[in-house]
Length: 225
Image 1 (cartoon, rainbow, N blue to C red):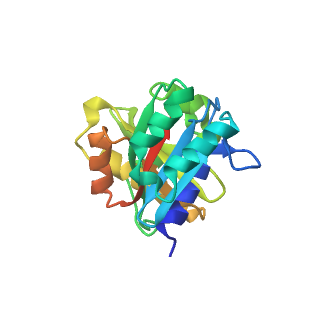
Image 2 (image 1 turned 90 degrees about the vertical axis):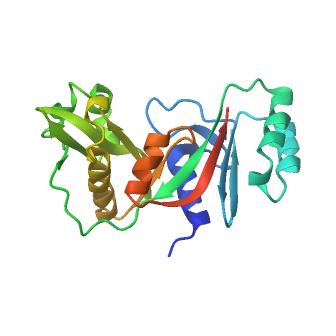
């Protein structure tokens, strides 16, 4: 069974592109925007810390001294140390989850989107349509002849995919989000990869979906830009 720390390793590799020294260079999805200056993935078994390749050696040495052996215990001190030499623009934190095995279930309301039927996305989800090559697998639920709920791979590697889930506000409260997410996760797992899901600490609706899906929280992300 894969450990929480191993899941966090998969997670950070899905989220960001790295250089040969394991430094963050970009977000792992088009248009490949700048990665945060520091990523901390805290789990019960320990933490994974990754620095941006934009940070100089002296800043990294300061951060290493602050972080020590317990990165998750000192977010305030980490922010203070980083802000001495850098103007910070954002601090983001939130839970990270993994899907249980859902391969043996069927989800009749969810439709798999392929190159043959991707026109379905164009009216309601144009960005997914434009970047479809990078967003597979992708599933939607159709209501009133339009796609109202979607789950696709926001970022992925050969080992894991991160879910991107959205339901139109007018169609929430009907369990569409949970159904379409399960269909997506099942396909990811059938293809031999691990299905991951993360959100911000302020997104209570997304956390509610995670509870309905009975996802297991393996850690917490901190991104400092």
